[in-house]
Image 1 (cartoon, rainbow over the protein chains, first blue to last red):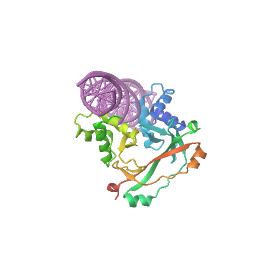
Image 2 (image 1 turned 180 degrees about the vertical axis):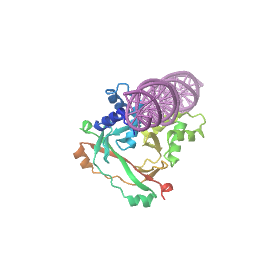
Image 3 (image 1 turned 90 degrees about the horizontal axis):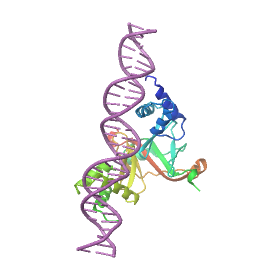
Image 4 (image 1 turned 60 degrees about the vertical axis):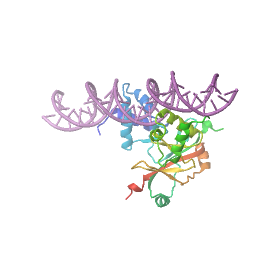
Length: 122
Length: 122
DNA sequence: AAATTAAATAGGAATGATTACTATTTACAA
DNA sequence: TTGTAAATAGTAATCATTCCTATTTAATTT
């Protein structure tokens, strides 16, 4: 993999963000450093960074969002403002039951807990 | 809500399908009964049916799929063929811990278990 | 240090899923 | 049966994302 300033920049933007941004947001941030960076470059590199394990992607409704936290973790999602909040909540499912009942070989669980974040509870 | 033959048809198609189809598939099925039905009608009615609790939607990567099973349930997803399989697996999370640790009011959990279905295990 | 080369880019066109628009049709009420 | 507002068909527009291509650039070879 050849060095690319744009790719490093995009990695740093995602790694230092706390908001699980989408490609458009990363693009706007990246423009502050490379004014003529193209959106295609952002998409291409986000995908490369994901495939090489440098960042993670989260499929949120009809948008892909990115996460610089590559630890295994899950998210709380606020139904009011769309905020995604990292958690250390573990999922425990009965592997044997799934294999026996459904003839299915489970590998990974992805979940969201939907609800209201502190800005919207009262 | 005024009666619409198209809406009833779309509801019946989703209700009787086992594959968690997307809008395009529902559209093709509906055309067998109403040859000039429009795709917009399918999208609009799928949304109405969802909002009135007649069917459910599943956000699967970047496509919306529909489910005629409105019971609270979750899915196994085969990473090889994309099949979604209904399960009765329950999610149990610690409501109090989430409220205390994250100042978040949880309401609902959505999860997928990713793995391989019987066609692809050997 | 210059020449070479293949990977990466910028910019823009294309795609695919979905939504919006509008003239016409239709359910249903007066 | 006539009036109406809701629903439709058909089509254009939108939005996120991917694809295409001429140009630029990192890294290798002379």
